[in-house]
Length: 296
Image (cartoon, rainbow, N blue to C red; front, side):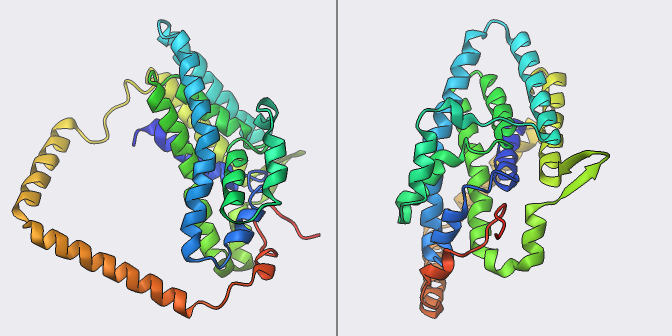
């Protein structure tokens, strides 16, 4: 995974945990609390909803970047400084809400909380990718990266990775939320602190620092073209040759038997947990506390 895709993944995770990024998630937590086996299904449907909104944005950014294909130096400079500006906005708590630029998003958000099951997860996914005033600079920085990809497919993939960065921690949090306790939940939410008269939030500051660092790397490496390889090509080639040699030496029968045993072990673990799990209390799950939500 290149540094651009890694930054997109981290951006998605930090957008999810940002102070306002979690405000659209109470319904997801409520519908999946105690769901166990259905949690992965809801997570996949939520991700599908994210992709429906985010991937077209990435494609649009790539098409916009293609207009300046003959001015790569200018495009890299503008994108790099935009990422730095977005990072500073995130640090200081200045943001913007992309929902205003996409017609009908607010109506979908209002409809989502009234639905049940996988439809609610899908609708929440379609609005969560662009929702949140304080998460706007994160998505703006990722779109700036996507505009310089030079490939429409790569730009769409970057926004898909951004969505995965939101979904992976979301599913993990939903799975362990009840076990974290009050202390663990408060740490995940982050906290506010003051520097003089200015108030900051730990998650926003961490996200902003990451974006500024990515912007600086982007500017100093000609859009990451001059970025040194983490693993030299010769080493990668040797590893591939050795992997092929090992794979050829293993009989196909052993591979099939091993795969079957793993599948049986997973099936046994899932069925055992489902039998031992108590009946799901939907009334109780609707009261699950989520990040960014305060009790009145």
